[in-house]
Each structure stands twice: as C-alpha cells, then as structure tokens.
Image (tube, rainbow, N blue to C red):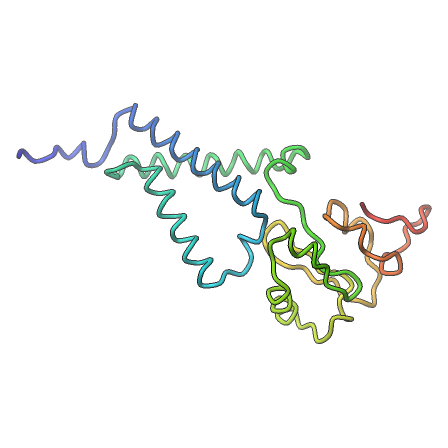
Length: 196
C-alpha cells in the first residue's frame, strides 16, 4: 500500500472543508439549543457527572465536526467556524429579540428568605444545589436573602436583605413578580412599582 501524500494528511478539499463548516455549525446550533432548553443549569457549578457529560459533548462535537479522519486543515476550518459562530452569536445577543432567542433569562429562586420550589424546577436545580451556592456566598440564614437568582451564565446571584432592591435590577427576571413589595425600593413617581 503506497504512503499517503503529505498534503492529504494536512489539508482537505473544498467540499470536505464545506462539510466541516456545516458539521461544526450544526453541532454548535445543537449545543445552543440544548442550553436554551435545559437552561443555565448546564453552566452552573458542575458535579463529576456534569463534567463527564461536558467531556463527552466535546468529543461528540469534535468527531461530528472533523469527520472520520481529522486533519490539520479540518481542525483549522472547524476552529475558524466556531470563532465565527461565537462572534455572530455575540452580535445577535446585542439586539433584544436576538438575546431572547439565544440567551436564557435569569430565574428567581428565592424571595424574601423563601425558596421557590416551582422556580427551582423551572431552572432544573435542586434545593441542595441552591443551599450549596448560598453557603458559598456566605449566607448564614435564609432570612439574610432578599432574592437569589440563577443568572444566564449559570451563576447564582444573592441579593442581601436589609437594602431595598431597585425593581430595574429584576427587569426580565422570570418570576420577578414573586418578590414582595416591601423588599423592593420605591421608584420616584411610581410608588410600589414592581418589575415584571
């Protein structure tokens, strides 16, 4: 069997390059859709099972993008495609409609010291995961928490009790209407206004 020419080991044909672009874009779109459907829970602090899943996702994405026999050229095309898709997604997220389509909104998890079980289910989180994040934030008791939110990045923000929350900070938060009025700051000219 004759040796494979060096250019075939390092580069690919235009049709193969197109296949890498389509495969990479398809897998990127699938991952964005999964994160959108499953929510930012996928991005929060990972357990060992989550880490194993992320490694498997990466392997599947790489295999689907690069094909049966990966070559240097295919890797470069896939990398350039991912960078381009990431830049395009960033440009889309700047627009309000694009942000709604691509990013998941923040979700209220606690209000006025109370855990909101329905909101936890919506965010695909358990009460134990929330308690762990509260401990990491230095919370000693539930009544120290005015609001806790799962952010689009997967981080959990903890707003402390004692200082009224500006309703604008809760703009776009799923479940913001569950925050009691006495926790919110009064906005000049619109007393008692609450974020939707």
